[in-house]
Every structure is written in C-alpha cells, then in structure tokens.
Length: 120
Image 1 (cartoon, rainbow, N blue to C red):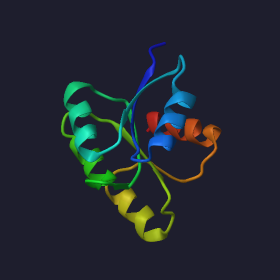
Image 2 (cartoon, rainbow, N blue to C red):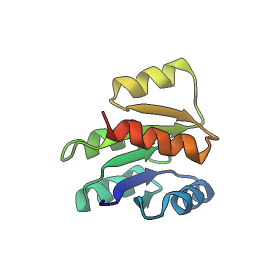
Image 3 (cartoon, helix red, strand yellow):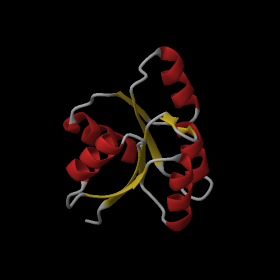
C-alpha cells in the first residue's frame, strides 16, 4: 500500500516538528509548511492526499491554503486549530474541510480523522 501524502501546515515550529515525527512512519509521508506561502510552494511541486492545517498562519489563513491546493488536486482537508468555536468550525466546513480538530488532540484522533477524510 502506498503511503498517504500529508501536507502539514502549522506555524508553530515545535508543534510542526512533533506532529511530523509522530505521523512520519510507513503509512504516511509528511511535508511541513509553516506559512501560507510555503504551503503554496509545496502544492505547486507535489500533489497531496490530505492537508492538516492550522487556521491562523503568519501570512494568511489556512482556508486559503486548502483553496489553493484544490485548484489542482482533490486533497482532503483537516483543520487542527486552537480555535474551537462555532464560527471557526462553520467557516472551515463551508471552505470544504472534512474534519475539525481542536488542539491539543491525541494522535489517535488525528489518525482517525485522516482515515475518515480519505474515505469521503
């Protein structure tokens, strides 16, 4: 079985490192972008199966990253954010994110969200 290609868009260096290490095993290949601009560059160079994305980025919004990626692929979107209110949830769903997780989130919940997003 081919590894699931994940673009992790997370501006916090420690969170990005930890999650990429935890997910970076045989089932997943993980690329990390810490800004919207980096996410766009990676999307131009590579197709992804799943985007796990923070909503607040230093140079834009995670919603913009998913919209950009979807110009050329049918990437499944998962929000992983510190914002858990209804306004952010509704906005993310309207933008096409399949899953919405609030930090801190156990790894098992993230992996379950990946599987659900891939099966939609």
